[in-house]
Amino acid sequence: MTYQLEKYNGRSSRHECPNCHDKHSFAFYVDESGNMLDRTVGRCNHESACGYHYTPKQFFTDNPWQKSHAKTPILNTPKTAYLKQAGEIPFKYLKQAASYNSTFVEFLCRIFDRYTLESPTIEKLMEDYALGATKDRSVIYWQIDAKGRVRTGKVIKYNPETGHRIKDAGGINWVHSIMKKQKLLPDDYNLTQCLFGEHLLTMYPDRVVALVESEKSALIGAGVFPNYIWLATGGKSQLSIEKLKVLAGRTVIMFPDVDGFEYWKDKAKELNAIGCNAIVSDLLDKNATEEERANKIDIADWIVGQLLEGVEEQHTPTQPSCDKEDTTIIQYFMGINPLIRKLIDEFGLVTA
Image (cartoon, rainbow, N blue to C red; front, side, top):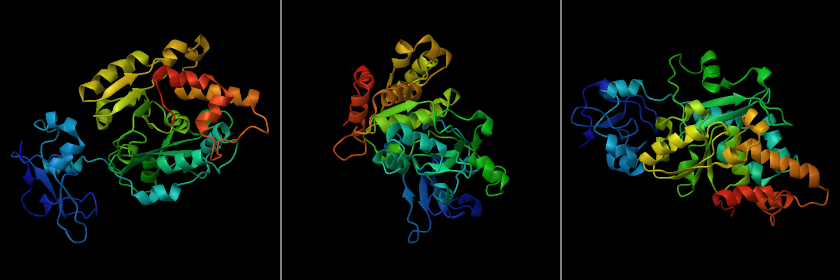
């Protein structure tokens, strides 16, 4: 399959540049039938002001799994593909909402750093995941794709003491829905979700991926085991191969909720078929109690249960703080509760 830049055939043959966002400056690379490879693959006409040029060769290097699908375009024409492109929220809204002032961050401080924001753990989580907050102190989990595009944000409010979602606080809301009501996005905004934390794949190309269902689990996992990229699907129903294909070529440890082990095993086979080395953790499947199964716990519940139990039983004013330079957070937690070693030994996880 060969590709060449789309020939100029009037204004409709030039599209929005993914870099400078000029509406009619971008030429797609198309095949012999006129089908584009991807909306990001092409060249901007503004060579001096923008200079964006992403070739098919570069695209296949970044997305090797696409080679086997290149002869089967999903959409028929460049125009159709352009109309169905994923919606993108301007980055300025993420920057405006960036804040520590959510009840969820308060909960993270409780389990990690004993009620202080002056913590390398909290700062690193905020830096990597760009958490936001609303006026009522709900957290915003931004979905940023591997190319740095903001797709949407999930808005949830938590009890700062337990870390449980406050279901009578309006449930789950979405940034794109809020912005549509405020006329900041068009009514036909095309929501295409991505993995929570997906942008970290570009930031840390050599790290092993730890995949969980909930954003909360991803952040708690990242706080305890920071040398892994912790990503969340956003729910079992969101565990689609279309969303997971961005993991092609990576080693992925999958941590299903206690009721999802068999389902995730099947998904691991699909991941392996596109070039992943996917491993499904059976920690909860093997070790959860009947009560924990009834409560449908996830890996975050298990970790938090061990951490808070150890902190409440053994914390004293003279214990070392986990934000001291000579004491890593994982060493601190293992000193409080040896059960954290169980998670490390069970899956060969490294902490440094």
